[in-house]
Amino acid sequence: MASTWRIGELCRRTGLTVRTLHHWDHVGLLRPSARTSSGHRLYDERDVGRLYRIVALRELGLPLETIGALLDGGGSGGPELAELLGEHLVHVERQLAALGGLRDRLAALVPAVRAAGGAPSVDLLALIEEVTRVDDTVRNYFSEEQLAALAQRRERLGEDAIRGVEAEWPELIARVRAELDAGTDPADPRVRALAARWMELLEAFHGGDPGLRDSLYRMQAENSAEIAQQYGGPSPELIDYVKRAAAAG
Image (cartoon, rainbow, N blue to C red):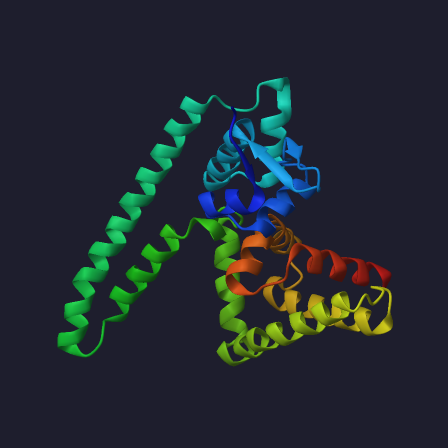
């Protein structure tokens, strides 16, 4: 008898969140093959194979839209499993090599800093470069030129302004979520005012640059479920609510 998993079981086995699987179902990326008589999602072994392909291709840097087109194109179900496993292995080995370099640098810096009471700026700059290289998520969405532009913008804004924006986000998200939970129409003036402030805070990040704005929106859209789960950021539903409120303004 073929194995099937309910969404909660699948999440426990894979480490993914229910919110993520709901989102992937909503956008048509991973739809369960069946449902129970009470409407609960049921995933079978073929769904698990597709799920692995999604996770692996996403880790390799492909956006969700591209992954969906690749998996659904030509009726082949996407790349052969053995080929994808090989590419995934190469990617993980590169990550391990990068992490090994970061570990070696940290191992060398810890005793030096303890002995000297501080670290030379040149060592800290090299450490920052190592950390940035290991963090693939941001680099999948922003070019080197864009990252440089963001660094310059951060310097122009100053740390006080940046901390102010970062401190305002949680309160703003909570206020918008309260309106969404209350069923307030996104065209309501109160919600439109919150959406306008939302866009102002985003502009503090991208400065009106359309390329930076598009990269930010794409990263947020394709990782919104994880951002909400891990960092308390806005959920996909909340982002859609804000977009509708902004459009109504």
